[in-house]
Length: 136
Length: 156
Image (tube, rainbow over all chains, first blue to last red):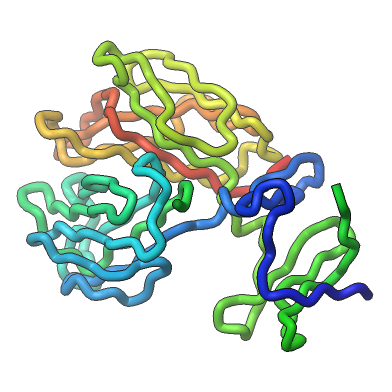
C-alpha cells in the first residue's frame, strides 16, 4: 500500500483547484468548489451553537442577524441555503405559511439572515445557514 | 501532468487523513476523529447565484455558478438550468432560496423544483419555479433579483 504524508494538498496547475472523480466514475468535480465555505447554527440569543468559518455574530435587531465570515468570500455572488423556525423556542406547535424569513444582504465578509413570523421579525430558536461559493 | 499513485494520505505525524479505494472514492477523517466520511458524497455538485430580472424586463443573468452549463427563461418565475457534468439520476437534493423584495406581497418566498413532471428534476437539467405565497397559501410566480440554489447528490 502506497502512502503519501503531507500537511497540505495543493493543485498543480492552479493551487486552489483540485479535481475529484465523481461517484459514477464518468465525470469529475472540483474539490474547492464543492466545499461548504460557511455554516452556522444560531440560537434566539444570537449565540452560535456551532459554526464553521464564522468570526462573530451581530444582533442587528429582533430576528435580524449578521454572520461575519472569518476567511472572506471572493465576491458577493455566492449561494446559500437557509432555514428558520421563526419561533423563539425549540418547540414549534405547528408550521404555517407565515413562519418564514430569508437572507438579507450578501457581502464578501458577511451575510444577513432574517426570521419573520408573518407579522414581525422575531428571534428564532433555530437559524441554520450554509454558504457555497468562491473564497477570496 | 504528473500522477501520484497512493492509497493513503497521512499527516507527517502518521495520522491518516484520506484513504483512496480502487474506484477513486476518497474516505476522509471526520472533524471529531471518531468517524470517517466520503469526500465525493459531501461535495456540493452544483451551485448558482442568479438574477431573474437582470434588465428589469425579466431577462436572466448568472452572477456566479459552479457546474451550470446554461439557463433558460421559460417565463415569469420559471427557469431551466442544465448541469455541465450531469448527475447520475434525478434522485438528488435541491435547496433553493430567494431574497425577499420590499413590495412583493406575501411572507413566503421559495425557489423549488417545478411540480407537474418528474422530468423537471432530471440528471441533466432542472426546471425551477420561483414564487411567493400569502398566508392563505396562494402562490404567485415572481422573478426575484436575488435567487440561489445548491445541489447535493451523485454525479454520473
